[in-house]
Amino acid sequence: MTQIGIIVGSLRQAAYSQKVANVLANLLPVQLTPVFIDIGQLPLYNADLDEDDTVPAWQTFRQQLDDVDGLIIVTPEYNRGMTGALKNAFDVGSKRRNHWKHQIALVVSSSPEATGGFGANQQVRQVLVTLNVFPVQRPEVYLGHVNHLFNDQNLMTNLDTLSFLQTAVNAFVDLQAKFDPQPADELN
Ligand code: FNR
Image (cartoon, rainbow, N blue to C red; front, side):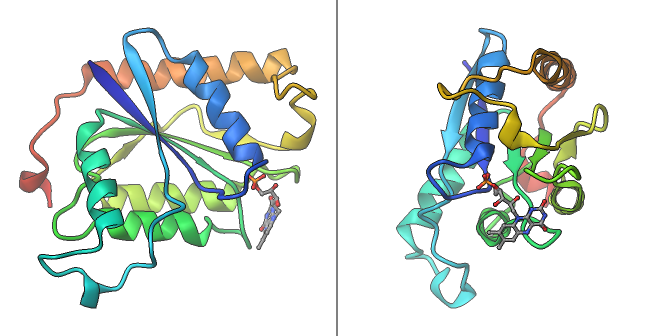
């Protein structure tokens, strides 16, 4: 079974990022199973605690990254960058060995502002490259005015956006299918 890890950069319950992530999960074809990976439980990274008997939540998270075959990352924007929670997740997953490994990632940013989380999106892409993850290059997905894209039932009512997201997911799926995964250890 091919599993796609979905990571949401916001921790709040009513997050637009979570709503967008739910839409993306539903746009995946049946052969790809979405797996939501929670980053809200991860203590801040501290190398002093990362010995053999490391923090259990870090261990669980690293295993979850090892188990997936591709990533969808949905990020809000805080102060023109990604959230602290998301950066912490990148840091936790990058240590002991690089658990982000060699895979494809679709990066989607959103914001109630018109700018669609552009700054956060670019920052995530930069970190992914460092971690030897391959971001889908195009289309770039910056969802502005995200607060107007859903109805009271949290359904995405804007059909143009839905169609655009399907195009982005298709690009991700095509790239992921062509991808030849290599052992993460070779790419640290
Ligand atoms: C924000 N927000 C915000 N929006 C934006 O477009 N650019 C920004 O730089 C920031 N900065 C920022 C900092 C902090 C600390 C907060 C709490 C918020 C607004 C943000 O986009 C809005 O709260 C979104 O709703 C957050 O995303 P979720 O939680 O809905 O996914």
